[in-house]
Length: 88
Image 1 (cartoon, rainbow, N blue to C red):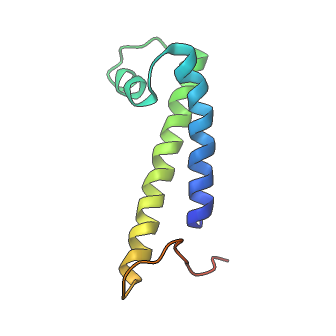
Image 2: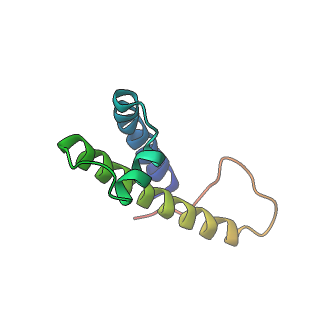
């Protein structure tokens, strides 16, 4: 995935997570910690919320890995927006 695709996907997931955050008045990060600690019941909403949040975490990790790879190849100062090789 390109940086553009990763960033777009992360933003889409954040919009989706915002619905749960507003409904349950809890940030996803805090919900995730409660879920990992086993302090929440297993409702359909919570299972979905957990799954979407974990996908977001994986995308963010991949984004940071991709970004680190691109920045490691930069020989001079960084120019924004970042250009990256075409991914086929």
